[in-house]
Length: 137
Image (tube, rainbow, N blue to C red):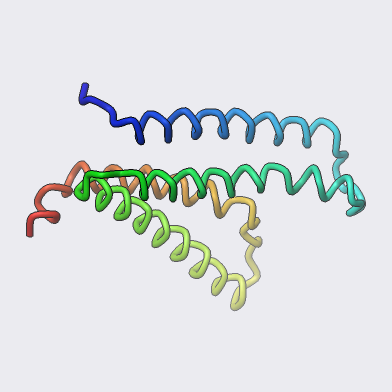
């Protein structure tokens, strides 16, 4: 296993802590907010708390990119994020147009970030399959 830089170790520690917090907040909100609840300030707060964790994830990713000293690794991480962004924009934009012109179920906005996370995994796969060849071309 390759040596992990201090930036990578810090990124992973924060990412894991935020992931645990996100799951805990979603579970707590699911427990304490009834289905079809009125949009009271308390309900809105419970709904927004996991969203704040998502902002923490993005902040952590940005901090990681700035902390990386290896330009090649930074390029791979940036490409991974671009693949994820392309996936989420393609799906949300494409499905949004289908919704506009056809009677199909709406794509819940909640799924945009999980789709982006799946895109990060796809970007990691792209990096593993093509990273060196494209970086040196």
